[in-house]
Image (cartoon, rainbow, N blue to C red; front, side):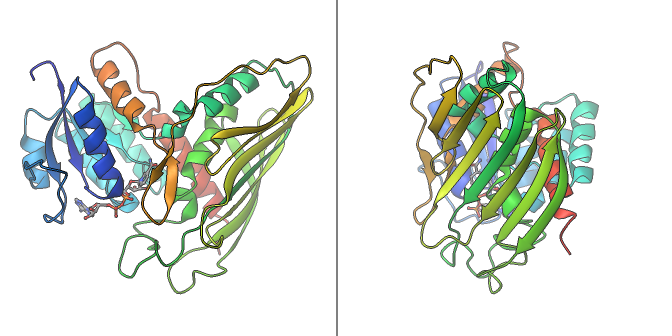
Length: 332
Ligand SMILES: NC(=O)c1ccc[n+]([C@@H]2O[C@H](COP(=O)([O-])OP(=O)(O)OC[C@H]3O[C@@H](n4cnc5c(N)ncnc54)[C@H](O)[C@@H]3O)[C@@H](O)[C@H]2O)c1
């Protein structure tokens, strides 16, 4: 075990369970401990359930994967970094730019890495799209439309849960759609928010924030765009898509989580064959984003073995939080 990277998971809910599984499945990783305020939760036959203080003082733990509610990420990440642990932070990294900056400061002060989880970056269609834009194959970008229409109803927003709570959840752009904001940032860089409008159509009884929004923005190269999102869709997720109109062509990624190329018409362009996308994370009544977490764990291991660098850096996590914060400045 000595050459393995030692991991601990903080928060053993839906995604914490997946982190445990992917750590356990990686031959170069060892799952050392798990901490959750609910000590009844178990990961298979794993027995080393500890308190957060035990976890921080355990010298065999190199990395703590923070899988707790959004509003706890910053404070817990800083606590781990100050205890000389690297951290993997589930999305979103934090709920404010100030908190993100505090994480960055603690990372620099303690010389420890922060890995933000934005696993959609590993999906073949996302990587194809990024290369297409960076290589300027579709030329000058005129407009970008992001549509995220999912279902999150009373099966998801249950009483006294952190989902729906302003302090712990923050809203659908943080909890449901930050992956797609990250994709926008990852491909087009910083974006400038021009306007945002929000509605709460059918979640007034279950959430402290909007369930739907319309956002307009511009990118530095001159194109304009919009984000349309909702968690009010009846019964099941409908789609998450991005359409891009450029001077030499038009493309659209679609499917439930931008996992399919739905349209591609580009001047003098031969579409390559892409690898198959991983299926979405399945949580019973609802589905989340692509199940690409094994790539995240592998990236941590390679970075700590000096053969790679963080795929989604602290500055990337901060940039996404800033874009969402800029959008939410339009909340009344
Ligand atoms: N990357 C992805 O695709 C993805 C998917 C789902 C969730 N997430 C993110 O992961 C995080 C957790 O989401 P989830 O769906 O697993 O939530 P969850 O409610 O299923 O699990 C959260 C867990 O944290 C525990 N917890 C709460 N307070 C704690 C504390 N102070 N110390 C230790 N444990 C504590 C809870 O007991 C619970 O077990 C959220 O930030 C969410 O946005 C990311």
